[in-house]
Image 1 (cartoon, rainbow, N blue to C red):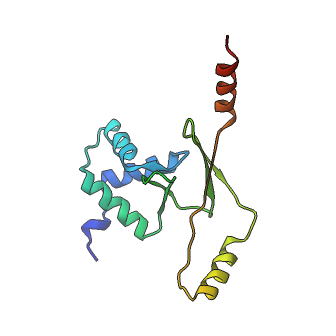
Image 2: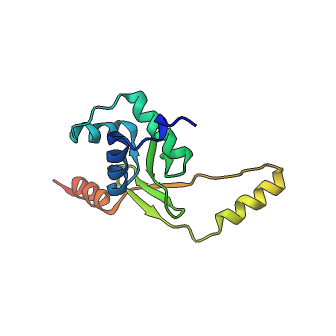
Length: 139
């Protein structure tokens, strides 16, 4: 195991602080900009290496909202997201069904191993609906 890869560097430390305070999953570009705002210069490769290490250790998880952009957040209780297609606001949501059980059923049925899932919801938030209604009703 590469000791350098697991050092608690200033960049890694601040990145974890940023992810701890984040209210939604963040793209690598957003994380890089936040590091720069804090006076830290991280090469894109360094940032990806740190993110990959945090993923491998399950400290963070990644998701995509159907746009091909990977976003990262601290790993916590299993949850999903609802994304406003207008303003891109993201909210965490819990799904009532037992999806872990469904994964097991599917795995047995199709003879797969390590079955996982991704599930994201999309719609228009209340604020954007109100804005849209105001614009349509304006003279």
